[in-house]
Length: 275
Image (cartoon, rainbow, N blue to C red; front, side, top):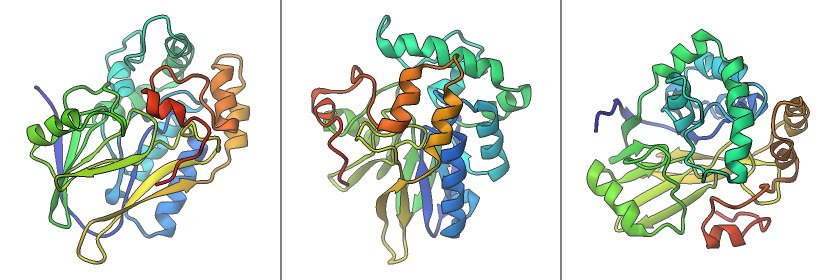
């Protein structure tokens, strides 16, 4: 595989993990404030991709991430934008509701992004690697083999295991699926911090991120809810160009559909998330 992989070396101190900003400027602003409150430097703030997406401010979101100097990788959306492709590359089933929605938000994002933002996104690597509390970690979007692969907690560990074998990693930090989860097996950790651009189908407008902590000499991780000005995000999305269903999800915390979800995750819709 011809991949661009950037090694961040050894990271120490609290490290902020997040994904799926989805053009949600208000959520990104709130998360940056959390990082500043927790004294987490930009080089310890890591995004798992899909900076651009469903919400109304793609240009402002990309520029804020650039100014912040947080680290990040290419999601499928950034790859498609860089190639001036006609679709988001999310691997939605053709003709599905998500596929139909993407025909609205993706061209909207394309029309709003400046040349400067596209050039910035093109500088992002496919993966980041780093060592934390003696453990080797790699950041992927879907999985190591496929940027658009949907990996959930219920996904068979054998599939996850192949990623650990190929990358020789102890920790895989992933995004894309939109749901936060963690799973440990055989001294390996698959950690999805969740996304900040859309709720996690749990019935709450809050979104999710995670923080690594090595203060005791070992790697600890915690998932957190993020409060932000979701009412403003919702209002900005009601512009006649973006899917109304996604604007509604910002408020309700419930996805319009669960067509990408396995049966287990689909059955948890609206029940909240316990991590």
